[in-house]
Image (tube, one colour):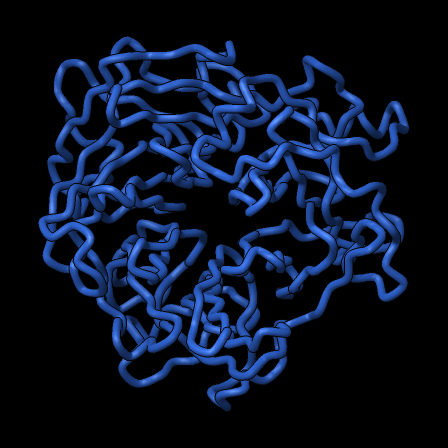
Amino acid sequence: MSVTRRHAIARTSASLAGIAFTGAFTELFTGTSAARGHAGYGPLVPDPDGLLDLPKGFCYRVLSRQGDQLRSGEGPVPSNHDGMAAFAGRSGRVHLVRNHENRADAAVAVPTVAGLTYDPGAKGGCTAITLDGRNRVLGERVAIAGTAVNCAGGHTPWGTWLTCEETEDKAGTNGYAKDHGFVFEVDGADPQCTGAVPLTAMGRFQHEAIAVDPRNGTVYETEDAFVKPFGLFYRFLPEKPLGGTGSLRAGGTLEAMRVPGVPDLSAIQETGASFDGIEWVRVPDPLARRTPIRLQDFGPKGITHAQKLEGCYWGGSSVYFVCSFAHSADGSAADHFGQVWRYDPHRRRLTLVIVFGPDTDVRLPGESPDNICLAPSGGLMVCEDGNGAQHVYGLTRRGEVYAMARNRQNTGTTRAPAWGEFAGVTFSPDGRTMYVNCYDPGTTFAVTGRWH
């Protein structure tokens, strides 16, 4: 990024205000609560403990920190807290399943556990935290180990978590004994039930996030490829849809999205732009035995790419996915600071819903949207993964943007401060608690207050 909005902010000494958006906000909340949006909860209050700034009337509890001991006694809490989801348990309990985006140089690896380890040479995986109705930690343990670069994922309609490896490394590289780049299913309540089995039919590529159509079990997948040719947007048609734990192991068909006449989504800059007749092309080799999927031959019409495909969620009758940014200097067709796209399977229509960018006001911070989730009140929560200060932003139905949280853990110096990104924002089943991760140093928070 040659001149970022962060640099513009530094030059103008602008104060925190919100994200610059343009777009059709109402599309983002189809099928959610009918509650009207509110313009946030007021300014963020500096945290005297230097961990997490929140609006007045809100408080947090630290559930877990990198390096502390797991309640299970299996080892220390791993580093690099990333994607996460919350599931209802018995007697009002909540099961949090949390990714650890660990590479070969990770500070704290996910401990290997018998029956839950795919490749002992890999340091990533998931941990599961069990909470009571007051967000007190009852247990914390390994949910899957021996996977690599577990970035995001998504929940299934039958109550499991699909954790995604954001890598294409094969056996023999980085100390790995097995190929990586797969999706794994994790049961937060009973990890041994799902084990450590790669869902190979869902493809081997740099996975980011998934969303499941609750009507027919179709799984949509994003690919966060870092260099050109960039990633693809996929759908997986399972042989046994909506069959509960283990159904995805039965296999299925992996396809990639083709937008006729649009080889690169970054070229589309106008919010509301729609494309009908979206095509889905079968992936020639889902296991990418010799060639990465995005480089495979999809025929004379080619396939549609996009830089930094990240967050993905299902809302109403459509799937939404995020392009965090695009840089023409990297090979993208155009520059942007973030997009949100909507795909309607019934109409086979793709629509650009939101554009992040400096065109409205460069003084407004916020760039590189990453993990996103729908809030119970009908709004949207967005984790920021850009430069400078890092926030969780809320977005209401009316298009009003507000800061919900700011990370205060400085991993840099006094003169050159740095803050880790937010990730894994999710809500408790009863909607009363927002859970969110600070990536570095790995910290998991439970945020409560008077939610609208």
